[in-house]
Length: 391
Image (tube, rainbow, N blue to C red; front, top):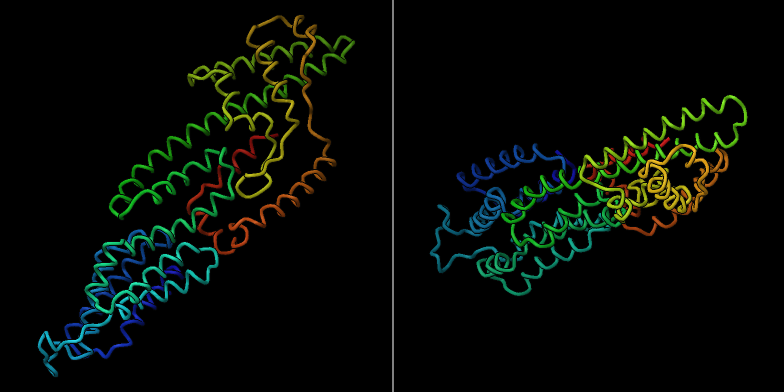
């Protein structure tokens, strides 16, 4: 059982221990609830998924009903030992009812970053200041959706710091989680939530796949252009008979670029579609990610963006001859990466600066608590796969 769920379970049980329980049928009901809860909890490693399913569920309602009955029983309401009329009976107060959520509240408070979740719990506790009557209190809780707010705000407290640590233009990584955040922010009950989260499963796959395809095309073009430029530069310096071999290599690289552009067409895209998309431009000059979610990236010279576009639109797409390619004077220079030693030094300095910037973000302040949660909700293998494509 997940530690958070285990602590919550202990808290829910502890509430019952504050009452004297003598009624046999209630003892059996409590025993059955404990077993059902344990069986239910085995299905979850993720606290967010657990919260979505538990709060407001039949199991949660049973707990609330049991608490009311056990509290009433301990006060002598309709027991064999001390029968009372309904007028004489004393129900538990709303304060006693909301106390069951104190353990979960304390866990949320200890986390440090779940501020909206804290406020949602405190709003629940404040019901006890508005009324002492258990029935009126439960009507307030239901009418104002206070238990739903706990689920909603506590989940957003986990998701939003992760989103803040991401690059909003890195759609493949950012979009799936942002779609779920959008659902949590707009929906007002668990039925709506579950319905739209199900719809999101398809949307997330489609949108992430669509963007990854475009990123893959861009990275392929970047790689082919690099090889093409290297061979072309090599040819400028070849003044002997070996230049024929180099011309053959240039033709091979040019044909490779043509095939890459044909693949772009096969996806019903144009070069301008790719070059004008703000979420894709960075990948034309991308080298590698610097931090966990790729919010910061180490790139090649930004002027390469124009140089690559020029090569494609003035040398490859027009299908000019090799002679024309070699005689053409470029408007934009293609800049290469730093040498290995300088590059390592530059990246080390960049990482140090990025760590300083990221240290102000909630995710990195509480990374010891959020790391495991981010791995459940974000596919970080996307970053590894992209990094591995760059030579």
